[in-house]
Amino acid sequence: MKMSIIATRGTHTALVNLFTTVMAAALSEMSVRVLLRDEAVYRLTRERVSKIALPEMYGNDKATILMRLQETGLTDLKALIRDAKKQGDVRIFACTSSMAILGTAEEDLIEEIDEPRGLTSFLLDEMSESDIVLSF
Image (cartoon, rainbow, N blue to C red):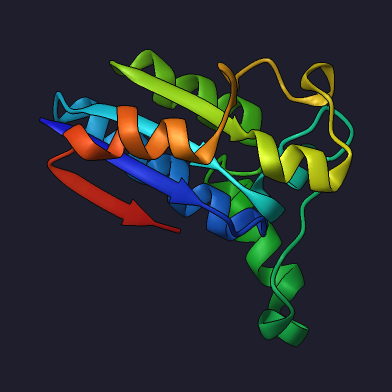
């Protein structure tokens, strides 16, 4: 079984949700392909991956939510991505058009991203063969 995901949101909790879903799918013996776009590409660069950006809607609860993320070991996105990839057949791509718009070069991306890939290529090669398609 194969799952393809297009992820655009870049808040810390959105990325935690994304990669815990990837991990669960891989543990369920699914092949998982992820195309990161827009905010997700922006956040998963060497410069920004360690910065924890929580959604504004959390308001005054941001400190409490950050503490809970720390308690559950969910503050290190790179470690979470590595753990998800260790569970099985997981490949992660950065959208080339998003990279161009953001001015992001391949060497700016964290090493856990497999490679840049165009949206059309992802749609034709990955999503067309998928049993499950998600968007984050």
